[in-house]
Image 1 (cartoon, one colour):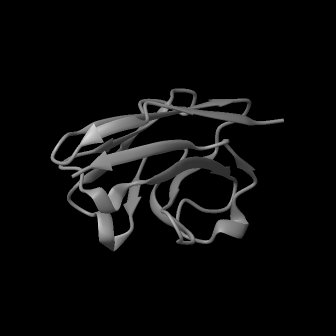
Image 2 (cartoon, helix red, strand yellow):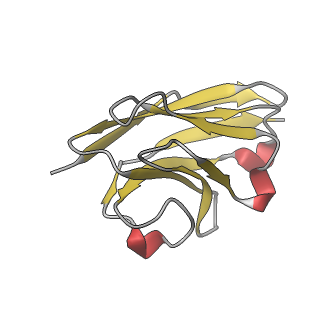
Image 3 (spheres, one colour):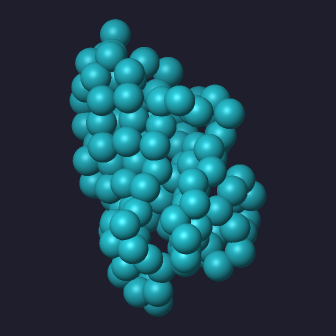
Length: 120
């Protein structure tokens, strides 16, 4: 069984930076970060491979989001710079044997998610 726990969210001001963490217990495969804004569907934002820690980003976050992981067993971090109110969402991480990219149905295990709110 794999469990994922996110941390680092909260209320921030526009222009701030935030570092989200995803701790994976059990075997860590590829990890993806997703978000779901108010009234919107869940969207992929970034993923990272295991092994190799190669990052992949959704076009809409390139340049502001950085995903990283030191080792396969280490937490997966999502650094978000220059936050804007449109980044307000519930952020979740997920584990997959098959992908580190968009298809949500290929992710096997999910964290509960945490709120990130960006005030204008």
